[in-house]
Length: 158
Figure 1 (tube, rainbow, N blue to C red):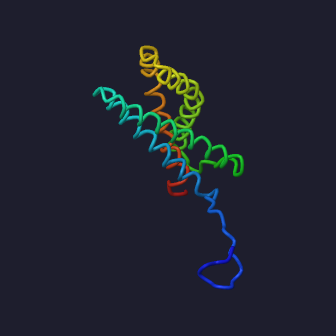
Figure 2: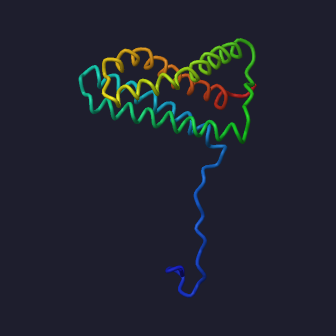
Figure 3: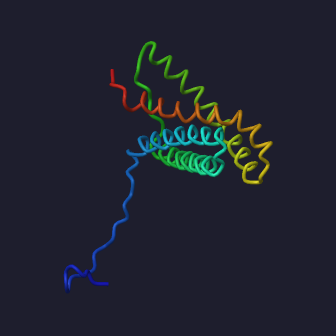
């Protein structure tokens, strides 16, 4: 196929636009923030009996969290972990947040999947019961994910 803008010229190669690995932590933080916002909106909608809006927000929160997890795994498979360079009391705060975030991030995966499955199967009584546990934990993980990013990548270096 010839380049239409340059008659007689050889075809140009099309380059795929690839997100650089160095951008992934920031993208992950945005996805976590989006997930937190969508979770809050979804909760507000269900409290107001706006079921379709609730469903849309929660499915988008699930998508944002899934994309976050994929980006996180890709980044850490290639770059490893980022050491925290803070000192003193800030170091203690960081590791307290990181440990609670990590433990709950592992626990939240099956909770989210079960909660979602119950909703999709129309088991709303059982969905609501587990959602009362899932929502605050998922929200905590999403918010602390942003906090961990800010502490690792945006705090001034000592």
